[in-house]
Length: 121
Image (cartoon, rainbow, N blue to C red):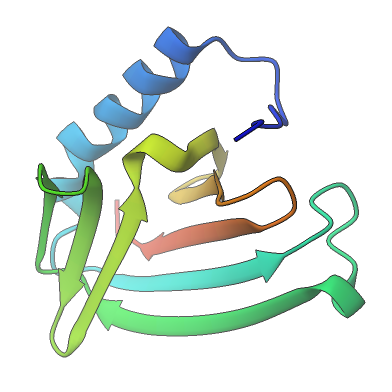
């Protein structure tokens, strides 16, 4: 699979930033969490004709790294969400308590996960 690197970030820096995020995610436990997920085939434009969006809201109660399948997971009541660690090509903090992951599943299929924590501090 040929991966398209959207942002100029070396693999070690990307990995370290993702690990730092998940090592401190417990501060968001009990916070309302919004996940906006987009599946797209044109990552450059995010054109509505080539992107499907979903929105979920839940209270974050647990997170972990699942070794079997190399997945980062976030869990709330009646909600479970995973991000495939080996498919992440981009991770950014987009604002205060806002984060974005981009995973690449094929040459033309990407999943964008935008996470917003309603955090009181």
